[in-house]
Structures are given as C-alpha cells and as structure tokens.
Image (cartoon, rainbow, N blue to C red):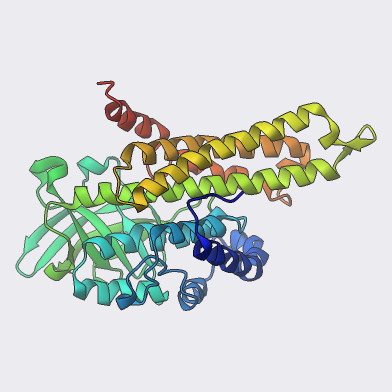
Length: 378
C-alpha cells in the first residue's frame, strides 16, 4: 500500500533494494541462521551498491539522500525473512555510524564513517548495561589518552566489529551529565569480546559481551563533547526507535503474507481454511493492527525527517509496533497450526524474531514511562 510520505525516488530505491534482497539475501537466510551470522562480505556488497550510506554526506562516500530513503532500505531489508540480517545492517547504519556523522569531527568521519559506509569496516554501538543513566564503564583521562574500564552486554555486531562507539562515565559523580562517547578500535590492547551470545531470535546477527580492561583510547577519539554523551545517546535513540518500529511493521507484513498464503493452501473438511470466517476475521484483525502501527510509525518518521519534535510520536510508534508484531506473528503461527511450530516453516522464525521488538531499544515499559511524562501524567 503506497503512502504519501514516499516520493518517486524513494519508490525507485525500494524496487532496487527489493530486487537485491530477493536475489542476494533471501536465498541464503536459512544457511546464515544455522551459522548464527551472515558473511562479512555482505557489508562490502551493500557498501558497493551504496545501501550503507544512503543518508550520509556525499563527501564521505554517502548518497546524500534523506532519512526517509534510509527507512525504505531498512523496510525492504526486513522482508528478507531474517530480522537478524536486517539488524546487523541496521546496527551499522542506524545506530553506530549515525552518532559519528552527527557528532564526529571531520577527521573522525574520514577515518571511521567513510570506511563504514563502504562496508570495509564493521561498526557497533556499545551502550547497554543495567541502566544507561548509571553506567559502570568508566573513562579516566591520562595525558593524551582516556583509560576505559568496564563491560557492555547485548552488543549487535560486537563479535566482528572493527570499532565500537562506547559510552562511559567521565564524571562518575555527575550521573547522566557525566557520560561521554568514545570510538574504540577492536585492536586496542585490553579490548576483548567476552563471549558470543546465543539468542532465541535474530540469530543471523552476531551479538556479544564486550570487555574493556584498561583500554587506552586517544583523546582525539572522544566523540562530541566530554560529559555530553547522554544527550547524543538520547538523540540517537529517536532514530533507533523509528527504525525498530519500521522493522517491526515490515516483519508483520511478511508474517501476514505467509499466513494468507498458508490459509489458501491448507485444507480442512474439504475446503481451504481461508473459507472459514474465523480465519478471515483473524487475518483482517492482523491487517488492521499492522496499518495502525504503520501510520503511527510513518507519522513519527515524517516529523523526525523534517526536524520536528518527534519524541512523543517516536516513543508511541516504537511501543505500538513492538507489541503489534508479537501479536501478529503469534496469530500467523496459530493459523499455521502444528506446522507453525515446525522449524521448516519460516513463520516460527518470524515469531521468535518479533519477540525482541518490545525489548530492544528500550522496553515497552520504558516507552510508557517516557510517555507518562510527555503527556503530563506526572
């Protein structure tokens, strides 16, 4: 279903990415799921095609397009059938490279953003601990370096990342006002991958625990201003949450498509189960839920793309789409009956992949707490 937010160039890009996904990603999803990672070469291939740099400035190898074009690419990536693959790319373009673009120096952009756009380097964002505002990872100034100590958990692309944007406390007594961001190269002494994590879903993306043991980071790798990292994190969260909502809507679309196809083909009592009113109504309910979340997500995307205050709408979209996709994929699995529980049917993967949508990037409960304040319930 077309939407006014997209122009002709967006739709041309959609066709291009859709063709790429169909030919070069979808046929290998089962193989990559079993391997629990997709090949590193996919970054290089997507960089070659310009898909990793759509929204970034041309001077660093990007396409110079708007963020709506980037959203189109992510939507179509989610249609590959593995949110793990989409998440690995999303972790690169949406959450790791974006703060370097927004807050980095020209030197940092040349050194880290440009090779990330080309797909020559893999990037990750290292924020997650128990609480973003009370991080335990610290960064102590020592001459021309900062010395980082701590750990990060659930870091997408963390196993293979060439560099990670790390959040650390530079002023432990200042709470969230004492957080800074650093670009940390994986080759740095003291930096290590604690372990590769095994997940219920998103299996094609590598996820890691990261360890920082007296890691010396040059002062020129401070990203943005010292002690202003929390504000950069909050700005980046808006785009991350919009993209998570987009991925959720696209996955729900795919689940509905497979549910309709299965209902047409599956026969019971001499007719396809699509002929039963209860099946038709369930599919209609799924479609309505998807469109409701899509409209809210596109509204948030439009506001964000045009520089408006999109925090409330972004938060609503993330919460709505995150809950919706779990409900829709669960209904799709139910329509498949016993076959839906079998590994040879992809609907079980959609169901598993969907579950993280209401957790990652801030749980639904956190989204609701933000909204409590935004709509004046305090």
